[in-house]
Each structure stands twice: as C-alpha cells, then as structure tokens.
Image (cartoon, rainbow, N blue to C red; front, top):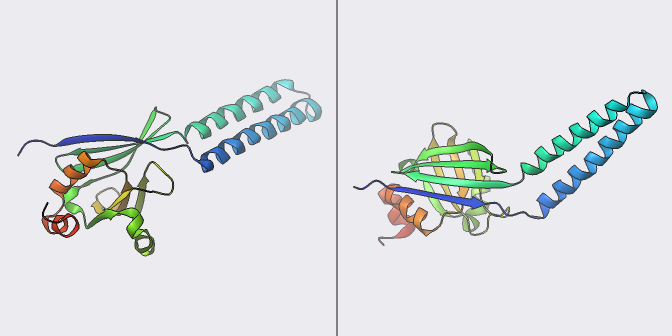
Length: 179
C-alpha cells in the first residue's frame, strides 16, 4: 500500500462575534488609557506611568485581536491525523491527534448536532470555518492526548476519501456504503 499524506488548511471566517470582541478590545484600550492618564497625571504626578499603561493596553489588545485570526490545519499521514490551530499565522497549537482506526462514529455534524450535544466526551475540538459549524463533519475518536474526543472539522473531498481508507471497515460500510 502506498503512503497516504493529505494536508488541508481552513481559515476561520471573521464573524459578528469576532467584530464584537475587537470593538470591546478597542473600548478597553481607551478606558485603560484614560485611567492611566488620570492616575499618571492627576493622582500621582508621574506622566511616564500614563505612557506605560497605554503601551501595555495596546500590546494586550493586539494580542487579543490577533488571537481571533485563526486557521486550522488537518494532516493525515497513513491514518494518523493531527489537528492544529494557528493563531495570527505565527503561533501553532496542537488541538488533538489520533489514529483513524480509533474512530467510533463519523458523519455530517449539523444532522447529528442535537444528539452529540447530550453525549459525554473527554474533549471537544471545533476546528471549523464557521462558528455555526455548517457543512462540517464530526468524528468521535480515541486520542492518547485528549481521550474520547469529538472532532468537528471541515474536510474537503480528498481528505474525506483518505479518512475513509483508514476508519474501521464496518463503520465505513455503515456510513458510506460500499462505494
């Protein structure tokens, strides 16, 4: 059997929740800068404190806003899958990793969302383009790192076909038929 390697990147869409976070961060920067001005100039005559507080607020705001700019990377290598979160194209964090043969269930997320919300999992990994997870798929897997894990993701056809090759045969036939 030939080696199978499929890698996909999905960029999270900037949605209204993200816009509210950005607006709140900007408002917080102004409030902290104003407080820094009041403390640094009016209460304690130390103007440099105002500059330090303003710089800290801007830096913290930048970090909070840049953390909202997410991409997710799915990598499948011979049945081993990793899901990484990439923040602001600079910081990578492994969300989970697992073998496809540990898959207990797979399917369209929106068709099964109500049933999945009531189930118990050690971890839930949402690595999707949209906050409402439309057009997303789910897998229930066993991971050494995260235990029994619900993984919600947005595979393309190539990644889905590669996953089908490595999930248990009975599950493949149950969910996808003989095709």
